[in-house]
Image 1 (tube, rainbow, N blue to C red):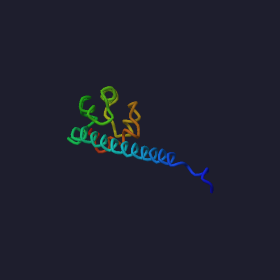
Image 2: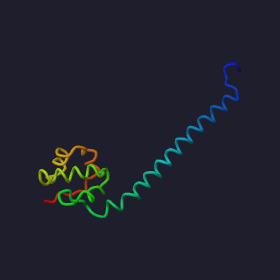
Image 3: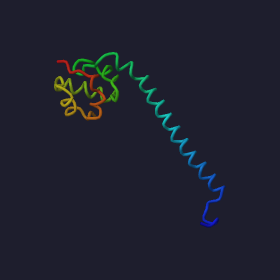
Image 4: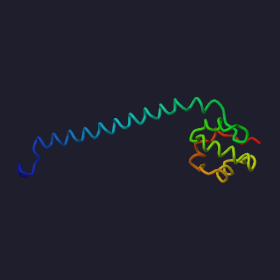
Length: 116
């Protein structure tokens, strides 16, 4: 192998700095992502863990405290309940209220009851 084919020391240094910079960015993203998840958990866990919400009895303000449910969706739930009666369970809730799907159901498991 000749010297012409080997990279220069300057090119090796630039490549090493580039690789180390990429590794640093990945580590920074991981640390920031972890810190964000901890912040979200600390911010919302106390409000949600306080009590379960009964979608057949509680008002829109209480339902709005659930993760993933905002004021509009909470009002839709209450309006549908008033128009057609109580919900039998998650499947009934999904069919009757637009905006509630399997992903939101998974987030609400254990936080919602369907008392009659």
